[in-house]
Length: 322
Image (cartoon, rainbow, N blue to C red; front, side, top):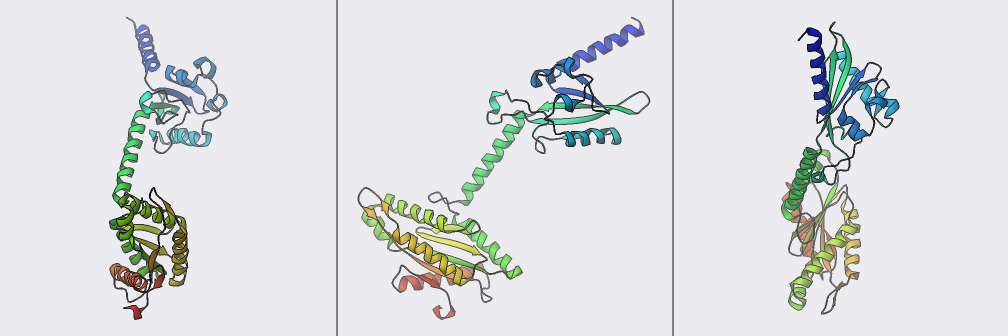
């Protein structure tokens, strides 16, 4: 076999491999004209090789991120090094439909892109190849894992009955708020409250109704609080709230709004329509609080004062309560 035939065979085999490649392959010149466009690209784009070869790629596929793609291609030319783009940075370059059943939920194919400079015999980079790998299944699995981990994280932080933060996580937030306020000097207050005569609700109507009352209180707490407030179920019928950037007077306004809202609430159950009330304690962070637990203890003393003085009321902590 002569040299010419060998070269032709090599070229034929190379083109066959490129055509059968289970990935997209494009070759662009310095003017972004398409010099190679394999069968993968034809199948997913619906654009035939005959209709795109020799044309500027942006003229044929106008929805490409032109500025981004030019920078990537130009960098490969100038640096003569490979470039890479992950689906996590840019989900896709070509908006191809995802036809993989296992990847339901992702309507577009997720793609990893490799940019490689192609040098001629004189060592100059004359073209750049783009290899487009379909990584939709990998992306789907990773996203599913992230979602599962997030759900587990949420479960570890939240109370199952109310979906408020649980005691352990809320206390960690309180510790962080205390430390932040100590450094910044920012004002901050906390609220602790519980449902008055809750045992009587359970004894009269049963624990299922008691759970409904707790859920109702948590719903009204959410409606009354701001996005920046940190609400928790501290245990049983007891709730806690961190109010960043809030002084005692403002916190008292918050507790009174919440108290009056709850006072008007009706929990409908089979045996009766149940109404209930709450007692609340407020404490603004002060220099005498040596740690976050002493801050919480003062709020608890204010709550105790509310309960000892007729319930269904709010009390702001002051040293005389001690």
